[in-house]
Image: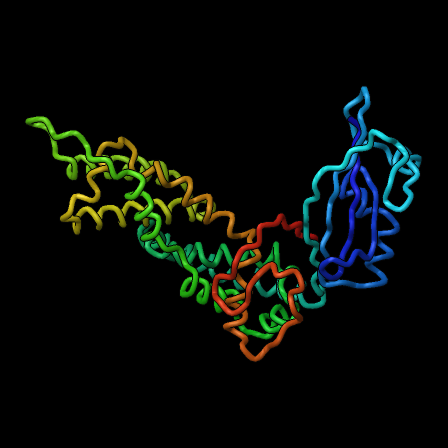
Amino acid sequence: MIWFYKFELRLLPGATALTLYAPDWEQAKASPGYRDFLQAHRPRSLQVVEFPLGYPARQDRAATPEEIRNLSVQDGNFRNPRFQRAAPTYRYEYFGNQAVLEPLAWKLRAGYARCCAAWKSWMEQGRTELYDRLEQVCAVQTVYENLLDCGHCYPTEYMAALLRLDRPLQRLSAAYTEQIGFRMEPEIADLLESQKQLPEAALPGHPGPMARLSQNLDREFQTALHRWESLDFAGVLRHAMEIFTTRQLYQGLKERIAQDSSGSMEGLSALDNPLTLRLPGILGEREIRVNRIDQLPGLLQGMFPDIVPEPDVWGIWKLGSAVPEQADTVHSLTL
């Protein structure tokens, strides 16, 4: 199969403003037609509809630009009768205002440096001093990395408003903690729901199910603590989300054990690793938040209620709530 792609560029839903053919998206973006298109329209965002195209051949490779030109595109049709088309996929390209984003990035980096200095002073008082404040660390890191990587995706009006604040990183991180945060109760409820089966009765001389569960949790948590002891300050920051989430899950489960009188947690006692069973999934969801563009717009709207940004024609986020709905699409974040 020799393949390439048809790219339909849209400034508004359903209206194709430019069609490009190329072996891949990177080469399409490098074409004079794409550059001229951006220069003429200067869009804040655009939708790219990607159609995989190809035809059977002895070789399995991408078509060359010359081969694509020789196919003689006529009204979207190709002369090769064996030509094949696959279902399209959608991506979104965003273009922020660099006159706003560059000074904002400088301000964010300065704010993050101040936070790091405070966190380091806490660690110098003892690891527990820093560990007990890791929720703040994780919120700041999430917001900081998201704004640096995805700030161009958000309405310029909100980015300009952040720039006018004295300490935008701290303000937005505080709102993130309060309105979105890192809630563990739903995760614990899901874990208990997935392990409803009752354990076998304890044998004489062996601990009961709740004592066994508590012992397994303690063992896993002590192993994690021992692993973290070798981390210096930079290492703790790199693993902040892991440390915070592990401690939060451990403490949440231990509290539930102390409060449980209905036996709802006994199903977990059959597991040798109740802590690490659920941890990777929780951690993975939290770590990808730095690349999600559906969470901060609602917070920004709450912080700046008098600002009316340019409408989001693609409906990627739903303003009016702290946690907008996430679109079922792939987002290409173009700087």
